[in-house]
Amino acid sequence: MLSYRHSFHAGNFADVLKHIILIQSLESLGKKDKPFCCIDTHAGPGKYELDGDYALKNREFENGISKLWQRTDLPDCVAHYVSLIKRFNSTDNLNRYPGSPLITKQLLRDKDRLCLFELHSTEIKLLTAIANKDKRIKVVHADGLTGCLNLLPPFERRGLVLIDPSYEIKTDYQQVVESLVAMYKRFATGTFALWYPVIDRSRNQKLELAIKASGIKNVQLFELGLRKDSEEHGMTATGMIMINPPWTLMAEMKQVLPYLTEVLGHNGEGFYRIQTLVEE
Image 1 (cartoon, rainbow, N blue to C red):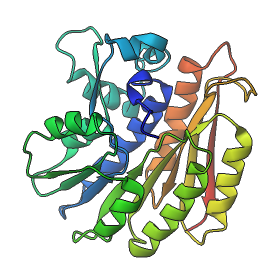
Image 2: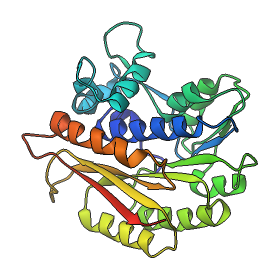
Image 3: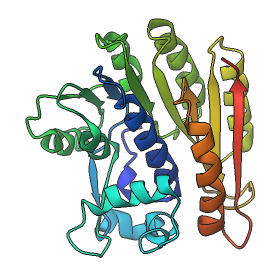
């Protein structure tokens, strides 16, 4: 929905999980000499001010990046993520948080490409400024779920599609599966990273069943919960569904998720899931 603003949620525990997995996936692609293309279907404005009105309204970053900022016991993947976020802060204070566009930009090589989709009329202007005439980056003012199909398969034949809708509309859960199937048919060897919130567990169960029945192969799920599922309003857990994930990701997340559960979970209620939804 065009009313959605990620600025309210920047740096929260969902961003922590999503961006750790994004970084690991992009670095895996970068280990080979061949170029890759990254497509971000819901890019947002690209960066966030954590001392601004939006972020301070609910202070969600305090249950995310803030709890990791000064720790010295971080697992390697988490430490790498935090060090990348620190590049955007001029002092030891946490004031800014980069969105997925800026995180990805840091990991691009000269021969790689990034295509950013954003539909919001205000945020597209901010996103365009972030790109800053970088020839590797293309910004498109359009719906990424449908628009990215025109880019698949990328001419590099290697790449990652990050899918990060707001899920403010219940039909988003069905639409992302339909879009994933269409994308997969065009680019079956690509890596797809689908973010999801847990607000109503029944919707997530339907999402998982739909993906299992879709014919898509090699699907893994990684979920982080702060507290037990609840009928009360709000996100209690978050996850990433990965299609054709890096072969190292499962082992890495077995180190990362128990740690994040311990550090970010509420009053011992934190939990995690690591699951292969569909075999290769």
